[in-house]
Length: 304
Image (cartoon, rainbow, N blue to C red; front, side):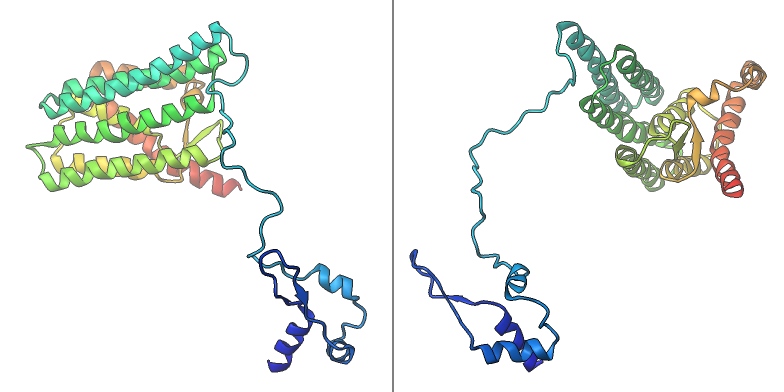
């Protein structure tokens, strides 16, 4: 270790004596001290210039180019592409739908706090409608943008990550233990935040969702409260927790566009069932969709 440190000091050039602009002096070693470790460690094939080329640079040295802190920052346009009046109006219309979903979510929270859980659930269903409308309009009008995607994600967190748990908590008040209802509602909020953040940074799959989307989970919760499923409080809390975990799962769930391509007779069964007993039909459809994720996952693993 002592010889190694001595050799390191011999290889590195130590600058000393630099003060107030005075030129620094280099420590020059005798040739016999330089050649001896070079021969010992097999460095004879390297020249002095090559060794100096790989010498570490002191972090105390000033950067080569000065950074101007007062330089103006570049502004990124919210709407990429041609900035015409017509495109701006379309862009404003799309974002107005997003803000409408956000305002409906806020209103649903206020209504749920006033004790009107079913009315708040209907407002959540309207949130789902506006959330699907803004994305469809953005693609149809050709004004999709990163700003719109971030706006949609933030509105979803408010409407489906906060308003939906509040509505669920208000609907369970009085019929379920307060602590259990609070834990179930908080679980929905936490899983919705994780689901939205993961969706923003994950590659998109045109066929399947990775986990149940927050929009669909909020729609299921809102319809459950609106139609008033006659289930015990323990079963309702367990169902809410299961739906929350399904949002952050890695199971593939089919998108709506893929479901619409199913044969007509598949859609005929739930329509007839809804005419007979809408509550039972709704519960069976939700359970079937939740089970489809693990089944698709197992099928993909077997065929891989």
